[in-house]
Each structure stands twice: as structure tokens, then as C-alpha cells.
Length: 417
Image 1 (cartoon, rainbow, N blue to C red):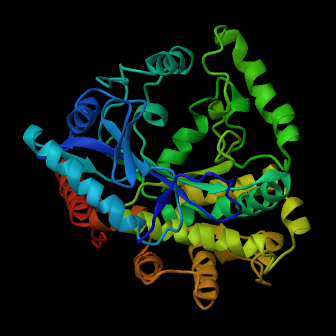
Image 2: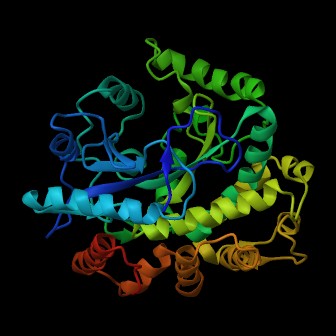
């Protein structure tokens, strides 16, 4: 079982893990959203709070009132065992929601909610931040009001470790949707993206492009350069819209990898929420295993990793956002980073190849291996959701599939159509 610690000394590479998982709150029968996250937190804490500690985890609010987040309360010493800890808290929240005939729903996007109508922002502490976002960007729409993700925070200490971790994660990033995508449906229709959440996330701050960049972060490997080239540019660009400087902080950054210098971590933000915590944690084990392999320079050097420009990695990311595991990667130089000498390969096959290589080196827990085997055999959650639906589906078909997903979350089971 993983232990969550409040460390007194700085953590070095892979000495700790921060995990955050977001869920929608819905009516048990209709699966329509219910904006009562504040009531859940009040029930647990005895008063309305933004965050409450519950055993080794914490529950907290999000931008909108129908979403609640579960997260490690500090850094966990390992990923193994966190799935069970998160599952216990999911069950605890579902027990609280029972009196309102409500439950938690997994998946990265609600399949039919209208994000332009009836969505409520968090109205309590930190509301000025959310209202500033709303005033500048209009927080209606799927990219703001309808998205649930899983975040992974990995520690580093000093520029040398930041350089290694940032370089490795930039290489891993384009592959993540091909293993973790779960958002092919929105507005009650199939979207032309397996990862519609990321397509909406990619464009939600388009008014100020420097906030998101190309999702794949720039090839920057020191704190001072990051401050000068990324953060200060964002602050300058948003200042005309934010004269009170409410949003001019490092968390304004919305790249797919977000350095948090206050925590000395890099937050990975391109992971769709899965059907149960065990599946989320399995994907996180895969991301960490590959990042470790790259940091250890097992198949390519640090210098080779640092050479990649974001405009070279971005097309690969967009392919996997659109097609998931079926995306064909034909960049031979990229494939060589993983020890492959071939002209092309499907993204899912590449991820499976990486899994097989790292599994032989005992990188994974048994639980993670089982879930990853399922993903490589049956497809991503997005693919399995689509398999569960008829070719021309109706609202009732969606309701049936997403009720099954809610049951998977409730019981901690994988979704197999």
C-alpha cells in the first residue's frame, strides 16, 4: 500500500507521486449533472470548504460545481496501492451522494450535457479566480465546463533534474492519448476525435495563445529560461485583460506539461479520466515507467531527447488526439527514440511494444499489468465506449453505456463492452 507523506526535504526524481482524479456528479437515473460538490465537501468537513483531508487523500472543488476532485494529500511514495485508496474514497463520496439520488460518473467528458446552459461555477472561496477566467475566456463550453482528467505530478530538484524530467516527458506526451483517451462522445454524437477533451482543452484559451502554446511545451530546460520565455510572456499577454493580476501566477500555464516551481514538480495534464481508479493508476504506471526509461537513457540519450522542437512533436500528439491507438506514427526519427528501426507503426502498437519491453524489466505492478493488457487487447476506453454503442446510437444507448461506466466506478471494475 502506498504511503502519502508530507516531506520535509526536497524530493528527487521518482521519489514521490502526486495524483489527482476528477469526477462528474450526476443523477443516478438520468445521469444529468447535479451541481452539489459543495454539499459533499460540507458533509465531510462540517462546513463548506475548498478541500478536506480524508485519510491519505483529499477531496477538493473544481471550476464547476458538478465536478469534484480526489487527490493525494502530499506525495505518495509509490503508485502501487493508490488505486485501492482512491477506490475507497470514491465509495465514500457515492455513499454521501445517495441521499440526493446522485453518484460519481467517470470518463473525460459528459456525453450529452449542454456546457452552455445551466452550468454553475464554484461560488465560494477562490471564486474571484474562477470569475476572472469566466470574464476573459467565457467558461461555458466543453473546454471549460465539461471535462474531467487525471493529473500526475512528478518531482524534480534543481535545473539538472528538471532538464532530464522535462526532456523525457516531452517525448512521452504525444503517446499518452493513444493509451488514455476516453472522450469520443459529446453533444450526444460521436466526435471526430477519440480524445475530444484534449481538442477542446487545446483551444479553450485561444484568445491568448501563449497560455497553452502547442500543448507540447517548448524545449526549455532551466527555471530561469522558463520564467523568461514562458511565464513572463503569458503574464504580459494576459495583463490587458487582467489588470488586477488575479491570474498572473504559474498555474495560468495550460501546457500539457506544467512545471510547478512552487512544488518542484511537473504536472502531466493530458490523461483522460478512466472507468475506475485502478485503470487510471495503471496508465500512470506506464507513463512513469517510460519516463524513467528515458531519464535513464535506455534507448536514446538526453541530448537526443532535448533536440526535439515542439512543432515536431505536435503533429504526433494531434494524430493520437484524433485517432487514439489507431493513429499511424510515421516519423522514423521519433520511433528510433524507442529502439525501433521502421518507417511507421500504429500508436497503440508502439505503446504495447514499450509495455512489453518495460514489463520484462519489472517496471509494473501486477494490477497495472492486468489493466494495461486489457487496454492493448480491447482498446482504449474511448474505443471500448464506441464498441458498446450501435452504429447509429440514440440517447438511450448512451444512457445504458454510461450507467455501466458508473457501475464500473462504483465497483472498481474494468469496462468491457
